[in-house]
Length: 443
Length: 147
Image 1 (cartoon, rainbow over the protein chains, first blue to last red):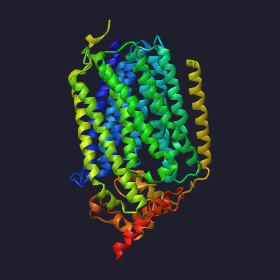
Image 2: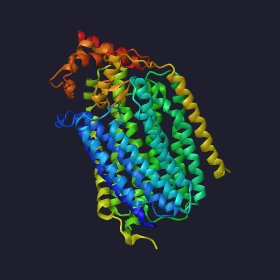
Image 3: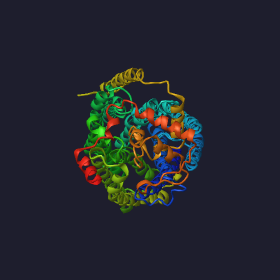
Image 4: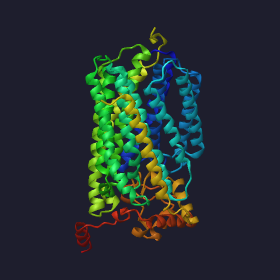
């Protein structure tokens, strides 16, 4: 590592790994419940498992982004982190809020709004925590010797994500308005400002891994995030087709959603071209795998599978079915989970001095988790398409159809087991060889 | 060839213009949305959220895909059936999937019904008809079952 305070990142990623483990565990509870094996129902009914599954996802990714920012910003700004002890305070506060929220979900303390279930009192603590995080980053950037585009894009994405949390905190009596502004948070996060964060991390990784000139990489970073916002902001319209607002969103959402894959395609081409152009072949092969993997799988999951059901004519039938789960799983995995795992894989050898660049367990972790996720997504796809046909076209009842498509949930569980094996291998490396070491500090 | 400065302008202008259009469309859309909600409907929504019904069901297509879509539940099953389910103190397990026994009071169950009725009367640009679409094949299937 270049700066001693970069090691703060490891502890944010440790929180990510812990939450990811919980997310997977609750995913299994949900998978088995879908098959009728819900012996835990009395203590963990499906809605609790679902809420824990979604919120651990959001928080482990946010913690992963925070770790990435604490690693990248000192290095890019060529300075130590401003008040690193405050960063640890921020981590502890985030952990406590997370634990309180997760415990509360088991006692029906929640808001009952998908993705935004954290109760209002804790929302304020999250907001304070994020403000502290942003202040630490901003002060670091301001005292730094260099102010790079990558840093500003990353900081801009994180700041916008914090601001967009606010519309989710407004209370509405109308379900229509509630839903409308809930998407301001959820959609504009995952198909908007989180892509800025992803773009910032990806740009950093490409600069480090390919050796291509920073100016070239950052120029294309602007193009990619420009396409993201150009399509993604008005693409929010695809969530407004059928929630009780007027028809104009069918046209606007339809057109701009169809453009959304272009942003992801641009990201994939950008990453692959930079890698091809790069004269420096970085020895950290696993970091290259995860980085290029994130760029490719995000295009498949968010771009292609998103397009598969966001046109209004298709979405009329697929809306509210397992087809959405198909898209959601690969999109989150490719775009955000993989980029967090990429920056961890790149950073750990630098933080520890152990050159674990291309070892068997690392390769196995990458392939098993990706193959497992693809099997899961295929299972959701088969179940979702069958559900749409039987339920929405043939008119069979929901429960009958769920029983008919049960076989796909077995495939889902097989896929989830393979994915989890890959993740466990990743975490073994993380715990066994990841602890930062001051001796790894570059002279 | 595109310069970095031009790429930056593309990003800033593109973002500003699309965000401005988005805000404009939001104002235009919300102008036509009913904001005065009857008290029973608003209370029904609160109960819906307090119990995290969206953690299993979907409404207007949004939720967890584990339990049925409820946009048209009153039209489909009638208020008496829905009231009985919500007030039931014993666990309910349709098609093998367990639902929490909420044991609601009649007043709360009625407010939930008011909430569902309100949702069921919204114009959802066609989605309100989807879970009522019966194809010729399904009609044959139902006819055979009735015979």
